[in-house]
Length: 454
Image 1 (tube, rainbow, N blue to C red):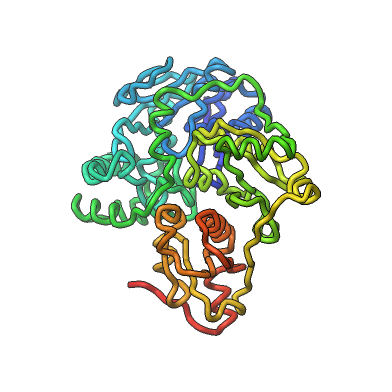
Image 2 (image 1 turned 45 degrees about the vertical axis):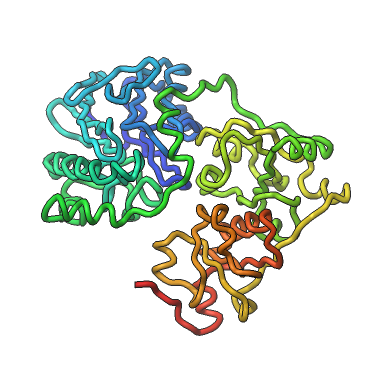
């Protein structure tokens, strides 16, 4: 078959910073690469073309989302293609370096590219002998390479050296070969990437600073030096993907919970997650609730801050999408979803339920109060309010005692800061406030420059 550009359909998860791919094989069948358990976008793309997924390829044991390959095997009869070295505990076609799969006109060749994980494969898509493109997963990505510390800090350097060799191998492909990575901008699996999500071998040879490293030691130093923290749930999902996620037999739903049920569940150890916008949470929320506004990054912060074995009760506004909430939780392995408060905070308030509040302050009103900056280290270094105490949001529960008294909590816009303030409130901090906006707003309001850390 001839392969046209529109035969490849990228499916971007903006929240996790990843791309899955659907390849139209031209005969009513499709190949899916690195599909998430949340298959809604993939299903919609396949339905538009009347495609059945015949093959589901995973480049590696993903740490940031549950794979959809097992579900595609169940629903569509897809053949799962994955590394033999991954020792997956479910039926799949186990591939080693150089193994080829006939897709019916096109060929998929496995290339061993360890580094991001031990068992990582890239998949070279061939039309006869012509290299069309390569699905590089967490190996070569736009402007960088994916992190090598997910199997433990003690193995990060060893795997970085493997990543060096893998990138050099991929760079030997013809310059015109398209590069289709899984990890991209916004992914915590990545070192800092560019904004583009796909590229070519030639473009990366020109512009990727890691490929420009003159030797292996320099490459390793650059890669390891660029790595920041990553969500806690990453440490669990690799093994969950090796075992294989549970098949979902029907579309998941989130039960409505009565006013009587919610206090009972809290008494049994359930956690309240309030997904409403920042201003709504600030104005009044159930005591002990954690604020995680429902947006693209919801799954990241849920997985970073809450254990996966705690029953979760959600508080949402009537216009918020409960299906989106549910899928974001399920795609990172959060199954204990007790339900949502029927009627939301309006029902809680009407029943005279106790509430707590957190002050929301504009940049011109925070003078004289200590600032707690909870952004990632790289963000803080690039520019922060002078004198701000820095504790990353992911570390705040363990380090809450280091937070200043009566802080104004700041992030880039306010969502993460409200999450941080809700965590501090649970540990007994009083007189909390959140900056409505971020450091740039403070600089504009005061006319003072931000402070950079060398």
